[in-house]
Length: 256
Image (cartoon, rainbow, N blue to C red; front, side, top):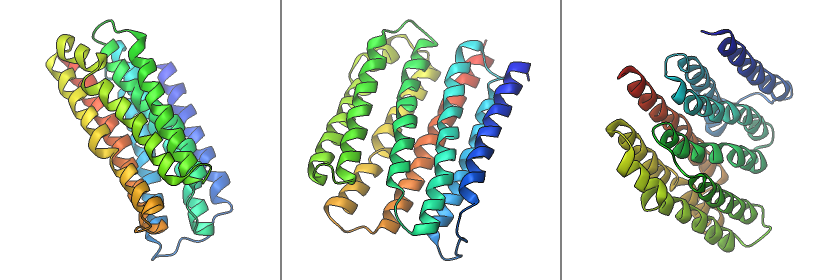
């Protein structure tokens, strides 16, 4: 492992420890039947493990793939720190940590969208328009959802705005410029990764609006169920997404 990589890994580890300590110092005891709190604990540990894995694996891939793999590590690192705090909010108060969750999403979801741009840039020249269109869709989706959840606008209007942002993202990765570049210029391994990533954005991300609809518009889902749904969706949509990036990076690097 290079000196720079060691420093980066130590910095990341220190950040995770710093995130754990302040929150845990004031945490209530986790009850053995608090399945929501347990899910927060399990996922925070899984995110730490994923972060360490992605950062260490940057030493294994070619230079052009290091940024993509580092971003995957940053996604899980940011999510892990927020999960430490979300965990303690839930265990201490029994209330949904909506603010922390959306702060996490406002950082990690744009980073996930950047991954589409980065894996294409690793194999060909791509326009910055792809990057900005994905960012716009992401911001619209998240701002609409947050405004609806906290009651700044009606839950229905927030849902509609969020769905429009999501639809804009799906259009770009299925029929827009990003999709065309992947189909025309990417090698088979990158095409496969791109395809799997966009299906995660389609199917995996569908869990969030479904939970929103059932929890805030339909009232059929409790806060406990909604948080468990969101938590396990985050595992799939953050860790699995990063594993796909890791797989294509390693495959392309070792094929040289």
